[in-house]
Length: 52
Image 1 (cartoon, rainbow, N blue to C red):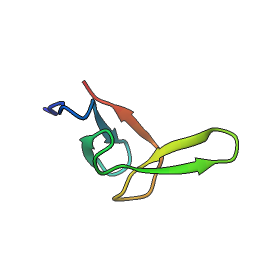
Image 2: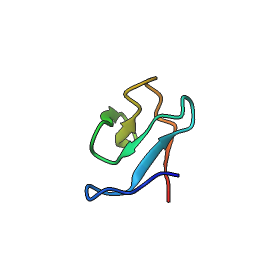
Image 3: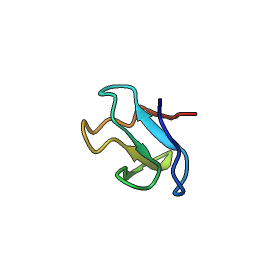
Image 4: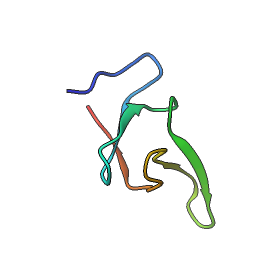
């Protein structure tokens, strides 16, 4: 089970299963219409969700 750290809730990648606290290992990318979105540092997908 994922633990939440002081830096915020954990995020989980639907594609590869990578999990880390929000803001720690996650990358941010700019999307032309959506703005800044979170990207998995392991597989590069933006298909992530908050756990907990």
